[in-house]
Amino acid sequence: MDKRTNFLSLLTLLAFGLSSCANTTPTHTVTPAPRSSVANPPASSATTTLPNPATRTTTPTITQPVNYQTRGNASWYDLGVHGMKTASGEVYDLYKMTAAHATLPLYSRVQVTSLQTGQSVIVTINDRLTDNQTNIRLAYDAAKRIGLINQANRLVNIRLLSTP
Image (cartoon, rainbow, N blue to C red; front, side, top):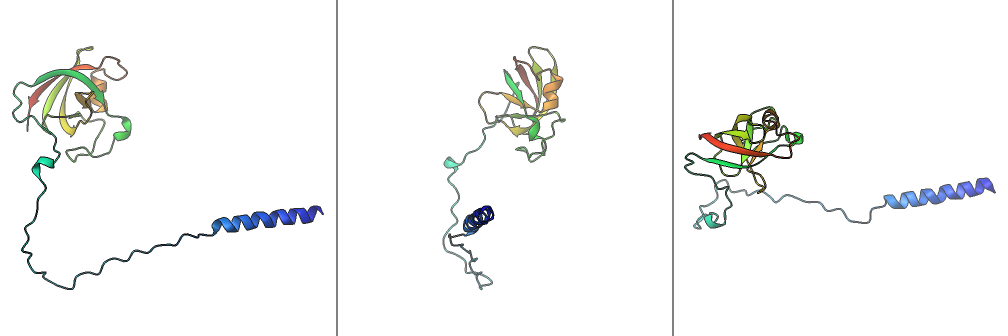
């Protein structure tokens, strides 16, 4: 009787296992639309409509930053961002002296000074900043050089040195 119970248990498990493999949902195949056989399609009389400039979202930039200087909070990129593309198209390198800013033109050079340590570093803006809590986001090595890592007070002075 013991062998028979084991055999029936095995059969039951096998039946449940096979029934879970059954797929009742139909599979859909997508066939691409046929290409047009016309070598040179006739010119359309309709004009091309461009997007409305009022609905485009662009990053505001300072057009003529003269003697730009501000104080605010600084942050730094997480180590996991290393190797990703920035707004300028460059690959982010945590060891380069780069930063993100919301409004300064890309490739501007700024001096960032920690108000707590007094140390400063010169960085190039190569990315856009999207959050409102931070004035500048530094590459990890730049933040480390001015003593911002593991600091509660991350107030900095940002001074524009040059624009592209």
